[in-house]
Image (tube, rainbow, N blue to C red; front, side, top):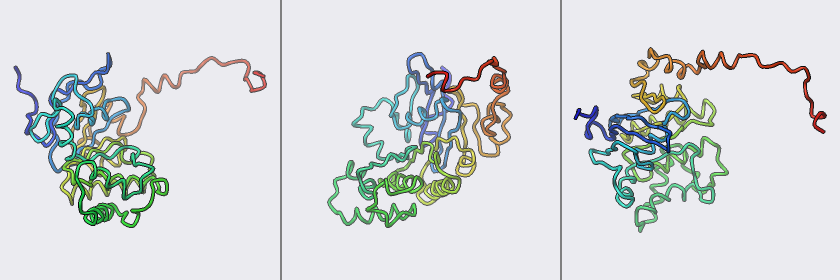
Length: 278
């Protein structure tokens, strides 16, 4: 039997021959990859290529059809939910739309994961924790605000503060700059870099935003139809010879798709108006 391309202790997170099917649809096709501790890995690719499904496997929100997932050398994809609960406290997750609880204040949102996993006796220590986490993302003073009172960028920053509430070893980001203007997006990029640098956190970032990927990532991995087609630093990706990679990073439609879009349709003799249907 051939030796797997990566070994369980090659990185803080390792997947071997990761394959996922939903019915007949093959979403992940035999991916093997080791994620280096303390680094930021960006996962890019077109919609539907399997990026978010891949990330969900890293904390076993999805279980592989085939293959294995390892965290710090321990296989985790076969653990039951009770054992996984302990593993997941070592991860932070920053959702695409922030996923804050609208009925809870900023303070209550941040302490939510703490109260879920820790028996809190010292409330003053909890106040200090919230203040510290919010200060890290430039949001100290907003403890009693509700999510509806915050801008999109502020909600993302609060979500980041919540993601680091339990001092995780890994943060998983799902499209962290989606829906934000360029300046606010860059604030989020700077915070991702800051958390990785100051807290020594390992980051995995799923993104369509190439400006973000180039800025934050030590390594960029591109998926296409469930397979890795490019893997390297920003310079390697910018100069990658694969046409699919170049189309994606430059945001250009392929020639076949462009030709189909430019095909002339049947010219109708009559231009209908709303009155024609009354």
